[in-house]
Image 1 (cartoon, rainbow, N blue to C red):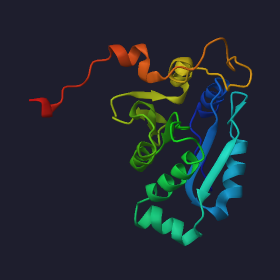
Image 2: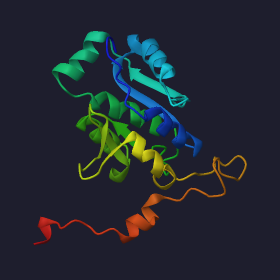
Image 3: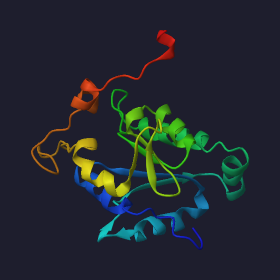
Image 4: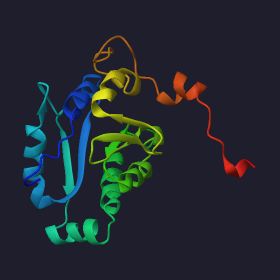
Length: 194
């Protein structure tokens, strides 16, 4: 975080629009717990196009600095902490309910982490250093700015149950596994089928 702005263009407006549709955010990092205050301040201070990142829990590794650095930089296994942390959050909910709708990350290990807690592969997005968002399978390429136009399709509004109405309109949440896209999409050819 020192000397460089790691903020990707369009992230705050995109996340703000997702939050307007009723979604809550969890910010997960394998940084050690000693960096939690700096991480929270960094997230709070991100402001783009008059938008700030939505509030959300910030989960950091409970390890000390060198243990966290060893896991991430030497062993290259940050997913071990992330999977455990995400499972702990998921266990706060009924077994029949997965609180994780989508996952944004910047490494292949984030895909492993999100898959481990049941995030649908079609809702796992990896952001490269240039700010390009790639679908988990690298076939889809976009940016935070272009995803803003698709927020209502990719993150449909839903009711929080308190007022019977949605946060963003008159539409109830529908599981995207039953969307028109998933119904009409063609499956890629599988070599195992030959």
